[in-house]
Length: 229
Image 1 (cartoon, rainbow, N blue to C red):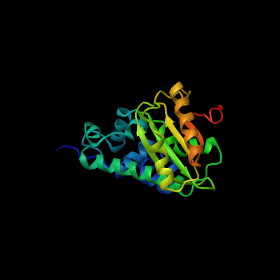
Image 2 (image 1 turned 90 degrees about the vertical axis):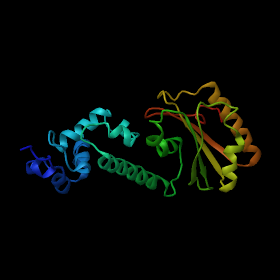
Image 3 (image 1 turned 135 degrees about the horizontal axis):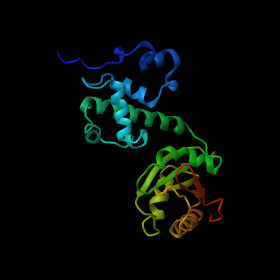
Image 4 (image 1 turned 180 degrees about the vertical axis):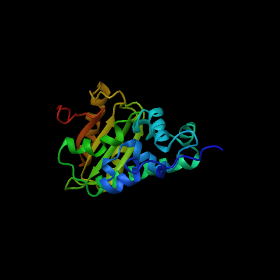
């Protein structure tokens, strides 16, 4: 007779992720254990902990798993459509909770505040995203909008698109942000030209460009601090 599917309850009490979460707290569990709770069951040949470890190994940890599709996840033996959907749902809830935390009238007091607001969202992006934060007179974030995706140049990032949303939201000021997928946030000539053009247009409209931040891998550059605004 074939062995039954490995489940979390089949493990010794001190190895069960659910029991450990209840007794020690979710923050004490490893990524493997948290995924095992989501997956609930393994297969006839491998435990749920083995399956979660295989998933993490395939995607090199949570970083690539965060952007994985259902099709990519279900290529892993032992993970079907239902398990893939559970994983993607949990990841999306995490992203939404993170946005709620920051979007509750987040105040931008410094370049670091602006970078912290978007760092986890933007540092893993494989393409350049040009994002604007629109602020009120108290420097609270009214709205965040991705204006365009692709390589940055002055002809594509048009002030009209940037400031149209500022006027719509009655914003007092804005911060422009874009990422460098290479991980190096050093500004290019195009970055500087775009910044100067947007700053000049903002002065005409009476909507101040407070900063232009470039996001890299856990680091950033402020063009305001560099003297380009």
